[in-house]
Amino acid sequence: MNSIIKKAALALGMVAFAQVGHAAGDATAGQTKAAACAACHGADGNSPAPTFPKIAGLGEKYLLKQLHDIKSGERKVPEMTGQLDNMSDQDMADIAAYFAAQNIQISGSEAFSVMLNNGDNVDGLALGRKIFRAGNPSSGVPACMGCHSPTGQGNAPAGYPRLSGQYAQYVEKQLKAFREGARNNDGDTRVMRSVAKQLSDAEIKAVANYVAGLTE
Image 1 (cartoon, one colour):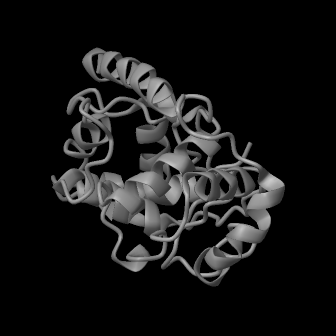
Image 2 (cartoon, helix red, strand yellow):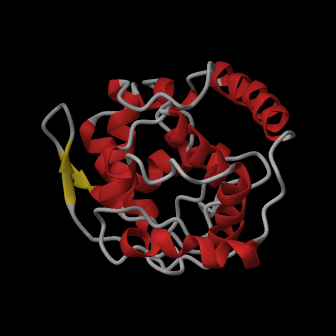
Image 3 (cartoon, helix red, strand yellow):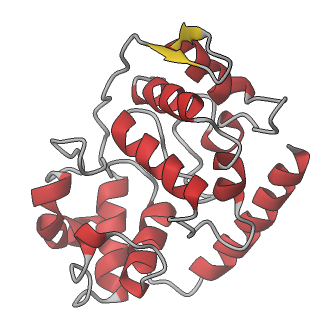
């Protein structure tokens, strides 16, 4: 766990350094430019369907990095193919600033049970809360709140996204993508890939459902 946290700290320095050259975003200008995103993500960044993620309030630095990574091909998102080709760095900075300033609508959690690898059925919300707040020391999984904050609001200056309120389906999909290596834009430190690799399907489903309803 300490090793992962140390790597995360190093990553913060590299992310901060990488962002220095980017233009400052203008949220007012971004509102007009973000019209192209509304069909999938909603006019205010609250996607109407779990097929697409909510991007309201995710944090300007995180959003800008994702836009650059998707445009460059570092992050593969088939649905976004070609969407950013004609956008300048300033356009993306403005869009990131706009969506970061919006309020996310909490999706909500559902009561359910999950089966662990040993065959036991446990309360899904309780397991999700445990993983988020305490991790799983036996498998080396650190507490999610260490980077994403106790309330799940993330750490905007550091570039760690908000998780609270996000669709459980999307969080589950991303954790599995990190685990399988299909998503690898967490930098050379491989923080998310290292964490997700230690999570079981049951743990991923549980923590994704938990953060969907996490509030302040």
